[in-house]
Length: 409
Image (cartoon, rainbow, N blue to C red; front, side, top):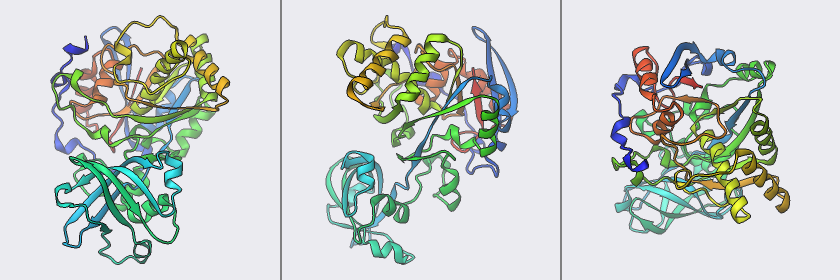
């Protein structure tokens, strides 16, 4: 029962020195903990390196990665009084669609977290430019407060010279590395807090399981006959939010938009119908995207069209539809509406008791204590996350975003 889940049961001691503050010199040089389930409650754990991950995946498998791209979403402004205000862009408000918003050339609005919010009285802010960077100065970027609720609000940005907002962020913003790294963003983060296959701008946090992949690893996977596909889920700042209430049922998940191509849906449908290949999800964001598809398909069966997936949909009732039936309904909906991709949002939370309908193997990093990501790992391992994390702590693994990796069957 969800009501019986307490986040305090998903706690462990993470020594500060085990948090990886910086990435390793080589992406694929990280350790790889391999965890295979031999029987209920019984696991085999091996220590490998990520450059050998191909050995752990059988030929014919389908590997799914999240190709979202992190944007330099943290901006520093200053009032005429000299007070500094940090604005952290979360998601576009107007235009509400990412591509259109990033293409704006004079003005746009974003939902933001506002640092030092109480000191912003609603006056127009000017971008902080202590080094007098000529490119920054030429843009004349300013921020106006449209509405505010606590530490969040709608901020309107306006700037000069017709530059697209995506380029404005690249010039004026910084990469929003996780707060638990305990440092400011540095030049190394521009490249390394981004996957090699990052393509679609929109995330304010990296899908960090993918940070370990190199061109060599990708080539090895292809040579072995392991097919790679992508989804796109834009990771929101909510990924850093702790579960504040001990009762997990009271935690509110943030909405994250995702896109899945019709071609991938066909492959998932064939995989579901034949059970002839394994589906390997790279990261918890890929898992949440893939597993949300079943409930989107159920909506198509019952209502004719999908909507955003509610947080507790997987636990509200028993579902009699097979995964194949659900995916068939999604494909029929896309064919009927003439769409080549499914574009939705999900708030789904994956906790112990969740029924995984698509994903067979998970590649993921080691997550914070008492986090929704650790709840997902617990669900995937049948509640045996402690054995994995104890092994990692006792064998020198590095934790969190720039840390080591695991592959869990």
